Structures are given as C-alpha cells and as structure tokens.
Image (cartoon, rainbow, N blue to C red; front, side, top):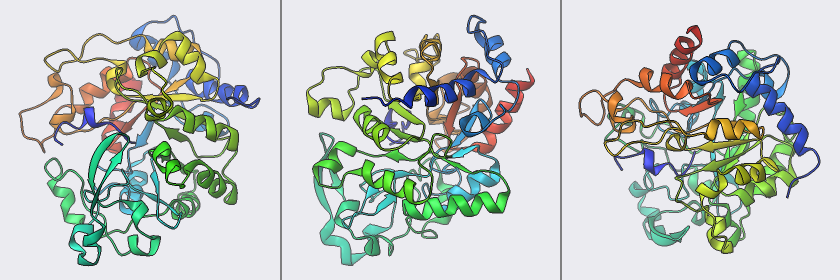
Length: 396
C-alpha cells in the first residue's frame, strides 16, 4: 500500500472485464447473493457468514484480512520476515509488495523508491554520492532512489524499521533481511503454497507508474511479463494488482486478466496521472455514481482510505459513514480500504488509550465499526488483531 500519509500521523476495458467483475461480485455478496437493502451491521453480518465456495476471489473469506506490507506492525515492512509472519498469523492475502524498479530494470519491493527510511543505505559510504533530490509526483524528495542502483547493489543493503517512534520493538530486526525482488516474491508464493497446503495470495502495487514511465522504466509491462512467466496472469490467479493511478490499472487491464483495484487517497487529492494529463478530476469525482461506473469498466475493486468510508470529525472521532460502500457495491466493485493499525496515533480518537505513540489503543472497537459498514476487506499492519476482530464480528 502506498500513499496513506493521512493515516500516518507521526511522520479502456476489454471484453473479459465483465467476467472478472462477476467473480468479484460473487466474493462480495456470497454464493447465494445478498439483499443490499438490509441496513448497517445486519447486512454486513448477513453477507459475511462463511467462506465462499469456488475458485479465485470467491475462495477468500469476507471480510478479507490483507497483511499490509506483510505484517509491518511486528517486522520491518516488505521483507520476507514480514511476509512469512503475515502468513503465520493467518492473513488471507499478503501485500507483497509495492513495486519499484532498479536501474537495470528489475522490480523490487519497497514502500517508496526513496529508500533512506527503509534500508541502511545511509550506513554505506560507497553510496554516499547517490543521495540526491528529485521531484517525485510533484514533490521535492531527498534521499536515495532505487532507480539509481543496480539490483546487485540493492542486494547489499538491509531493511530497517520505517517508523521507529511507533514501533521501537521492530528495530530489533534492523539489518536482518534484504530487499526482495518481485520475482523472488512469486517464487516464495509458490513455495509457501506448497508448504502450507493452501493457496497463498498476494496483492502487489505499481508505485508512481507515471514517474517511472517517464524514466523509461515502465512498470506494467514488467509486471505482466513476470506474471505470465509464472502462470499468474489469469482471472483466477491468486494475484490482485493495485495502483493509485487509474491509467496504470487501465494499462494492466489490457495486459493481464488478474483482478484489479484502483486505490483512492483523500477526497480532494488528484491521482498523479491525472495531474500530468491535465485531468481536473479529484478522488471526490471518482467516487460519484458516474465515477464508480467508470472505474467498474476496467477494475474490479477500489482501495479507499478509511476516511472515505467513515470521515472523521474535527476532534478526530468517527463521523457518519458515507454511502461509498453501497454505491461501489451497486456497480459490482469490492472495497478493500486502508490501513488499520493498532497504535494510538493511527486510530480514531475515541479508540485511543493514552497518548504514547507506541502504545496500543482499542483496535477491536475500530475494526468492529469499520466492518459494520459492509466493507469487503481491510489492509492492516496487525493481521492477528484483525482476524480476532473478524471472528468477533461474524459471531455477532
């Protein structure tokens, strides 16, 4: 998952599209279908009582628990340590990973192309001269960037905890794991599926695709090539693709048959591909009835911020839910909002306990409130907490 800074306070369709939407629709509403007119928590409980039958997305439980960058509440994000633990804790899907390219064209898993905050690159004097300032999606950003390193050079680095003020315990694991490539993730997925005796799902994201296409490092073709190589480019493949840029999803829709999800930041923001193209629309336009119908023409789901599902009041408490869940379901889109975290600063104000930045609040209460809106899944840094919360919710 990418640009969710608001939740981190401390720091052209093809003919097969309708078929893929039908598959996700079955996952949303259950094998027997559900009546959308049933309000609130009752509707959510009615439509989410069991694991749906069938292949592909219909095999995933609802609400789906998606391990955000693995299980980054407990391990440095986008490492095999984080991915493995997400599976150990029971995540239904692992977000492995946020895809950015190297200088020599390989795809690697990092939260951002700037790696000063997620690796020990600053401790490598041989790379001191690579530190620079670039304009990334219109924002001046200083640090070290994956596109300035070969894969061999990146493999000499080790991952570190990105938000140590909130997760000092994670710093214990600094330096333990290297940066994974997307190809390594696809091999890992197969190995873990065999080892665990059940299908492992992943949920990679194309990061800053317009920026990288301008550098001659287009992401979508590289993603499609690797998915085809490993036989994971079909409608029932256990790989969901996501991006904050709708044109990246449109491009992927022409290249692969995987389920596709458009990520949505704050209502007033504009996807960067829109900015570059001079398209004046904002996320608020994309979540209107017209905008959602357009998205459903080439995507099967949306990944909105939690604030688009339930906005916050001025004091940081939750307000009234919007109609986004209902409106998206009406056009056959699933909703996988982001990101639930256990620590106080990331929770709505009424679910915080004390003021310590690294202390847990009451995430169970927050999960219950979000699940009651009828969302189809959620990205979370704490898969174990989410699974307990789902069990509680489904138990009534």
